[in-house]
Length: 416
Image (cartoon, rainbow, N blue to C red):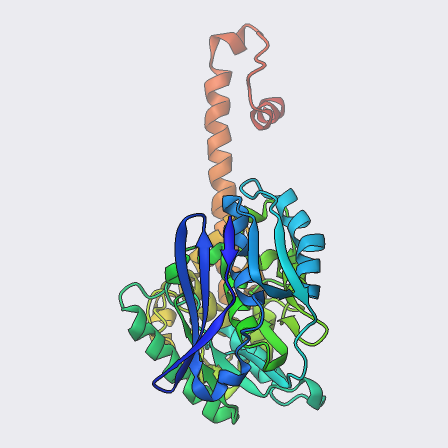
């Protein structure tokens, strides 16, 4: 069983921490979420919404019921128990249905802030650019955030966690300065204290951070993954990224006074880039790499970004500040080959929109036509060889029926 104790706040050296003490059977855990003390008044210490969501995937995988001596927002508990758990547990092999027994209270009232993350990725920059100057003032961004709840731990293995965090913060400060929006920098030991796969739990840990500060937020734009809403699925959800069902989960974590939007899900990542690729923020700060603190040019995300810029921009010089454009242009065929294989063999189809857009470029189309011809020739040679083996066999010459012959080769024999 998991028992969530009533959260409390500790203040030290101009920092304030919201602390959650957790019992997992006989094991004691202490999770904290830290902000500058000027934001202490927004920390939500009268309920366990944040840590309940943060621990939810862990509880489902390990089969732990959840109890608490504090409160949870009535809407959140109702939607988790009524809609979220029955849906995802039903279609996950590794999850077990659990019971959550916590007293409820109405949703937090009075929040006015509208926030989003500021990682510098394409999803993040798209959300910032689209929402910072909205005509509808009631939906316009008021704050940017950096929440350290696990994503730093899974990236940039060549550097320490603190180096990575400082790098991301410094870049976020520059973005905040250019947009004129205040930046809230937070920290947490959640990932260290409750180790989980970031791939399977990123939405849970991100919402943990949002709900820790729910006295501030009336709207939070959660930058969706690079897939649009057509990829929504709860089938085998424990085998794929939790972003596949965030359209459901984020609504379950929202209340009448705090709406968490899966922002940008109406478009693919490539369509986002089509909208923002000429923006100064993109040319100076876009960072998608999960290997190095500077875009490496070689990981899948960097390759995808380079190819997307190549599909969209007549001139790639403006992106030399964030990518090694000269290297890309010198080794373009290697990048084409990678995209071709991703398109043909990839399961998710993340880069299919880039592939389709690049077909409008003569050099890429010529490359693909050549690859298709090579495959046709290779297939022809293979079946010709197999046909000759069978046609020259004794069994074939005496007219025996060869039921084991593959259908394609049978067609070849018929033609011959």
